[in-house]
Amino acid sequence: MRAMHTKRPEAWQQVRPDRAERPAHVIERLDGLDFSFGPASFQQANLVVFEKMLQDMKEMLLETLSQRFGHGEQVHILELCSGVGVIGLSLAHAAANSKEVGNVTLVSTDVNPNCAELFKENASRIFPEDGPTSADVKFSACSASEALSSMPDGANVLVLDPPRRGLAERQLRQRLVGGEEQAAAICNSKVQVVACHTWWWS
Image (cartoon, rainbow, N blue to C red; front, side):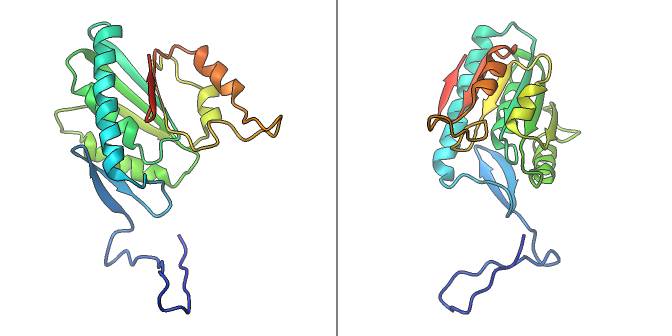
């Protein structure tokens, strides 16, 4: 987003790329799907481990759908702290390719507005208009709290990949991190499956 220079010749330099010569993003392949990342979007540091997590999450989602969802039931995914939508789009793609479920919808949310265009690019690459797999996907630039307070009706799969502080802003109350309202919103919703890259609950 900005150029940083140093007089030290041994130091790394970050410069704004010339769009005429090269794209302002990189493309990484994760479990068979290509995703674009930009300089202002979050990317996992260890992509090898993250790819294995994606594989496990897809497998567990399909297993859960076959056990807990009725045949042909619609899958509505709400993703919080989505970044460019890697987890949500991956799970939506896996669900859309399953013969067990009906229509698949995905609403990915992130407080970083710079993710919107990259999400759109990733979504159009994974779900092309003339492709064999389809899903209704969209991105909303909002915080996790805002997304939970206006949770789409019928969202039955919730995807979480929050930062270390959690879903809520820090509350310096007995050195605890707030999140009671967010937890209550999840418990009172129609969500049947909560997926996070460190745990799984259904």
